Length: 334
Image (cartoon, rainbow, N blue to C red; front, top):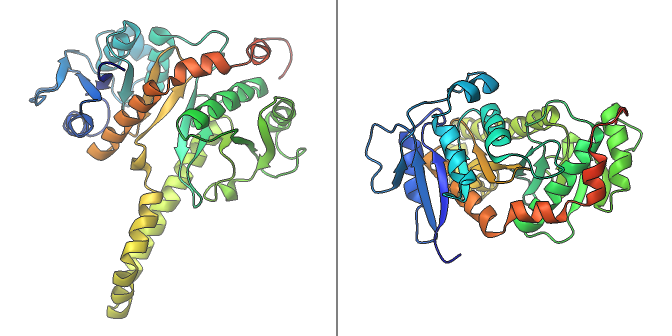
């Protein structure tokens, strides 16, 4: 682009707002990226662009009500900047449900997309992959999962730069006939989709890179994401506790420190900082509520990368018309 990529940043979203959000925006700001802070700061924006929004949607507010009653909130105003062409993408560490609701109302869905989905970059022993849906849709139909798979494949191609990405369906067994009604029906659709679908994947493979794209409903996906993050965190804390037990173990820990640091970085959720909310007409990135400044900076960079690679446009172009048509409501249980 001939100008910096402008990222509207919800400065009031998250547990550590606005201090951590401003600090993260400062880390991300450069010749190529221009963060625009949105909110009622109360502190110096330190030279960053600032748009005032005098309402805040709290983490525990009911999303639908908050969107209706707080049109001047930092979350809504951030999205409106994107909808009005004054920003290229939005980043928020605030209420994810509210972000989805605002996105549906302000940015709106891409034509034919029935359900936006959260695409999460997952760490693994053999490199990152995409899990979709990471929590936008607690309930979904098989044909929604088919759309998620196409959006996830585009994400993997554009952001992870993977050619002809493999796709697998998260289930309780690798056999096509294993799982609940949702997974069995979704398996049939994915097998006939034209995607590089290689079957089901069990959750035990989530840290081993089960595929380039792993598809599931949002309820299952959110549990999977938090389980992986919690497992990695707990393992490193347990290892640290063991290292402190004796002089010998401390010496061993010292010798292993470079390798352990590399492994920890590989599984660090702050590496990407956020997840795309895919299927909308504008680019939105949702970050963890307890994001550090480094995580916010990486979320802003992730948003800028999505703008640079035209992720929204690519999804709109590559979503096959037959997939769009198949997701329309019908009397079928699928």
